[in-house]
Image (cartoon, rainbow, N blue to C red; front, side):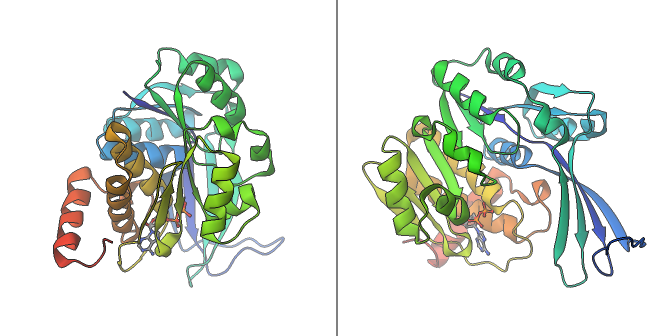
Amino acid sequence: MKVLVFGSLNIDHVYQVPHFLRPGETMDSLAYSRNAGGKGLNQAIALARAGMDTAFAGAIGQDGLFLRQLLEDTGVDTARVQVLDSPTGHAIIQVEAGGGNAILLLGGANRCITPEMAAHALEGLCPGDWVLLQNEISCGYEILRMAKQRGLSVALNPSPASPELAAWPLDTVDLLLLNEVEGNDLTGCTEPQAILDGLMQRYPQTAVVLTLGADGAYYRDAQQQLYHPAVPVTAVDTTAAGDTFTGYFLAAWLPGGDAAHALRLAAHAAALAVTRPGAGASIPEAEEAAAFMDRTSKNGDCDQ
Ligand code: ADP
């Protein structure tokens, strides 16, 4: 069994600024860093670090070759990453002294995925293999349909929330991983329990993971509902917390379907990620996540 992440690859250009740019203003930045990002890339790194056989399908421009290299260095099969004549998807992020940010996005190559590219990328996958999708590339709807037609299993993180998602055949998704905002978008409900009930009513065949930031996460399927609290840590940067959770949950859940174990491991991996700055760089290795889980259970401060 392998997981093909079909998703986004982004470059985050981060500028420290005295204040956000005003219309017509030109201003020197205080510092600059270039980071790898994109939900697809982050989730693939989390899956691979968690020990899953992981492949990636997506698109970059010439300026994004380092993203493909990063995936390769993490052990991800990048044979399905295409280099197009388009800029790589990127974000221009201004960060003010107080930590607030303003973000300008360009989908770039992520929005150049065509149905033909999607069909080609799914070749070679067999029933038993999984496709993990988010909502940051073009043709997500087509990829979901084609994957199901091939008899593949699909995990979907419907993020960022968008009105088009309502038209996707979500009842065919095998595992839906989402946060409260996305859950609210799909159900109209705000309370976690109402979101879970609403999703089960609409998609009774779908297993659901609902994450609630520092308030923990739920797992729900037709047979059971489980909860695991967030592991108490001092949060430094919550970027990629959800992506780390998604990758670790899937890697731990797929082999034997043990949702309680998967929730617990994912909560520990995501907690480690929030104690460090950055996205990909903050995602822990499997040994580290397992050791952290051992330590907290010995201290008896998190599981229920
Ligand atoms: P997203 O980034 O997709 O919005 P969440 O914010 O719900 O995802 O976070 C996903 C998971 O990461 C949570 O269920 C929790 O386990 C962990 N997490 C997030 N924020 C914190 C935090 N401040 N402290 C500890 N764990 C956290």
